[in-house]
Length: 161
Figure 1 (tube, rainbow, N blue to C red):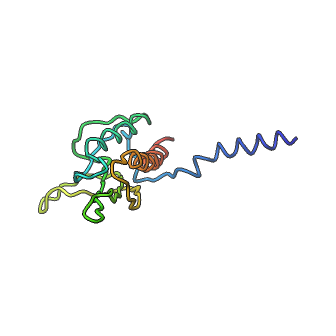
Figure 2 (cartoon, rainbow, N blue to C red):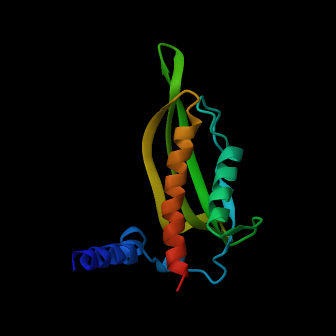
């Protein structure tokens, strides 16, 4: 009897885990959701070693590992990743960098009188400000992957039926 109760509890916890960790958002639902365009905003040179190319590669790998195809940029919606980095100096020496970032589904809309503007039309995942020691790219990558995982989980949950 005791084993069956434990089995039931474990089954329910696994079954309900997706309801606890992911949410469905109408703004994340797309017909061709498996094709994702990626844009990484320009990143200033910094002491941690974060570059636009490294973030783009990490983002593409994360998407592909979750069954999503990264496609060339055209018009429409895309995953937009913003990284803000500022080196922290103490006594004139760079000790590390203050880093914050967010990722969200955005689309480019062309307004005739203004030109193209970006509209974030869905949930945006963000990480608060953190200070990383000089050269500590691995800690940044861990935080970036956690942020992307939350967004990808919600994105997939919103599109899978």
